[in-house]
Length: 231
Ligand SMILES: [Zn+2]
Image 1 (cartoon, rainbow, N blue to C red):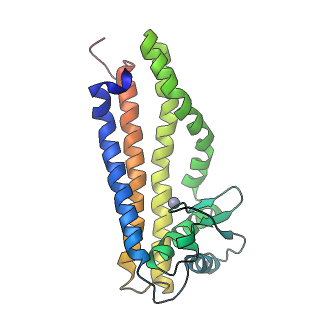
Image 2: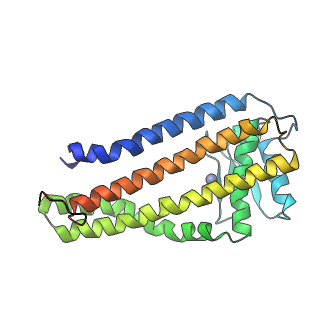
C-alpha cells in the first residue's frame, strides 16, 4: 500500500508535524489573549469596521458566523465572517483576527495582485487536489508513468496555490498590525500580544505550503521525473 511506504512518511511527516505545531500555537495564543481585554474596549467587529472606514471602505458586510477560528473574508460577496469570540469579543485576540480579515477586504478593494491570482487558482486547485492522488495511485498500481506525470502536473497547481497564499496572508496581517498600532485600537503595550496570534496563524499557512511542496517532490520522484533510480 502506497501510504505505508516509509518514503511517503519521510515526505509527509515534516508538513504534518509543522501543521500540528502551528495549530497548537494558534489555538493556545488565541485562547490566552482571548482572556486579555483591549483598553480601547472595542469588539472585533467594531475594530474591523473602523479599519475599513479608515481607508474609506464602507461596502463590506461584517457578520457573525458559527465556529471556532472559522473567521474568513469572502471575496465573492465582499463579507467579513467572524466567529462569535471574534465578532463580539473585546479581547486582543478578537481585535487581531478581525483586523486580519479586514486586511483581506482591503486587499480586494485595492486590487492586491496575489489575492486575485489566488482566487483565480482556487477552482483548478480543488480539482487538482482531488484528481491528482487518484491518478497517482492508479498510475503507481498499473505502472503508468504518463498517469503519474499527469497527477504531478495537476498537483503542481495546488502547490502554486499554497505558495501564493503566503504573501496574501502575510500582507493581511501586516495591514492589520499597521492599523492596530497607528489607530490605537490596541496600545503599544498590547500590540505584541495581538501580533502573536497573527504570527501563529501565519505558521499554519507555512505548514500548508511545506506539506504541498514535499508532496509534489514525492510525486515527482515516484513518477520518475526527479530521477528515481530504482526504476
Ligand atoms: Zn487570512
